[in-house]
Structures are given as C-alpha cells and as structure tokens.
Amino acid sequence: MVQSFNEPFLPLTVPAEPDEAEPQALTGRLPSYIADHRQRLRDRFMQGGGAALADYELLELVLFRAIPRQDVKPLARLLLDTFGDFNRVVAASHARLQMVKGAGPAVVLELKLLEAAAQRMMRARVMQKPVLSSWDALLDHCHTTMAHRETEQFRVLFLDRKNVLIADEEQASGTVDHVPVYPREIVKRALELNASALILVHNHPSGDPTPSDADLSMTRQVWDACEALGLKLHDHLIIGKSRELSFRSQGYL
Image (tube, rainbow, N blue to C red; front, side):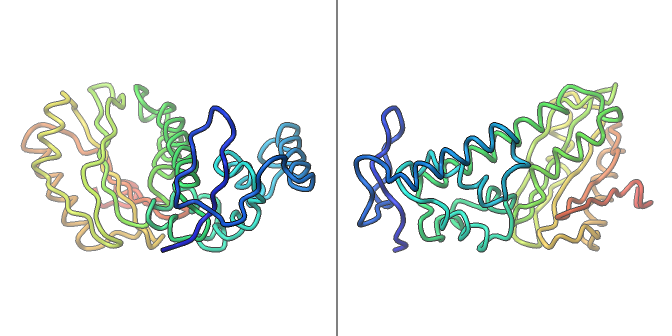
C-alpha cells in the first residue's frame, strides 16, 4: 500500500483520511521556515498572480489546504515529475494520482476541485451563446475539458435553430485509443433536447488529432443518421494536446 502524508487538519476543514498519515507529522506551531515560505508564496501570488509563480510553486499553494502542516514542495515537484506539467497533474485520474507517494484523498480532492472549477468557468463562457461568435471560447472549453485526459472521451454539443449551445454532454468514454459511439443514441438525445444541430468532439490521448479510419467511418454514420431526421452535423472536432482538428475545415464534412 502506498504511504502518504497525514497531519492534523486546521479547524473548519475536513479531517484527513487515515491513509494520508505520515509517521512524523508536525504538530503544534509550524516551524518558521515552513510558515514563512508559505506566507511568501501567498504574498507573491496576491501581488503578481499566477504568472509570478513557477508551476511547482502554484501547485504548492493548491496543496497547502490539503496538507496544512508540512512542507509540500517535495510532493509538488514529484507530481510534476510524474505527470509532466501542471495541467496534466490537475487532469490526472484519481487512481493515477493516488499512486504518487504523498497524494492521499485530501490531495486528490483539492486537485479535482481545481479541475472542476476550471471546467465550470470555461463552460460558462460558451453555454447559451451562439457558437459562431464564441468559437475560440468553445475551443478553449474543449481543450480544458479533454486535452489532458489519459483515455478517449466522446462529447456532443447540441445547438438550437440559432446555433446557440444548449447542451454539452459526454456520450461515452473508452480506452487510450478507442471510444464506443452509437449514432442512434446521439440523434435520439438530440430529439429529446429539441436540438437542430450537433458538433461532435472527442480527444486523442496520444496528442495527435489526425483522424483514424474509425473516426471517419463513425462520423459518416452520425452524418447519415442526422440527415435522416433533419438534423445538421456542423463539425467533428478532435482535440489533441496542443491543437485541434476540424473535420469541416479539413474537408471531411
């Protein structure tokens, strides 16, 4: 079993889980070198924002709440070394995070809360807005939600007659290179929502958004199902690590 951090939590916080225990957890007053370091980071952040901090320092600030009475710099650096960058740390799965020594349930909770908040903020920029006038925000939303996932996810964006985004729903999730998609279920859901048009979105965990033969075939099946019911398939976006591919702009639709 992976050994991880634990320490008494400050008042008004959720108690640490037992499997976050560290044999010599600090008690009583924080040593000055830890307290001073934490305050310096907080001050730098308040004065200069996130740009004033390195990735590991910003991650330390996130970890302060989860581990309030220990030096969290080693864990911050270990998480970055393990996953590669700040985004991948926050987007890592619960299971992968808990494999890292020191990343117990309280740490995972803080990281997943941060991920959910980021996704909620990006989603608010595009929901109930015309897609064509907020296309860049829509792409940002898709990248925030999907670009750093370790497995494929398939989402459908449902639009009304004025191309206003009325729903963004996950339809399926799969493995590192495959996700099952059922065209009949997609058009059925579109009719339930009284949608007039769709945008398909899925990610490639490899980072390369080039469509596979299976991607092309599935898109054609969804196109045919939409045509039969008077729905419009506007686009299919494949989200890679740093860029996306549009079927429409590439001539696949």
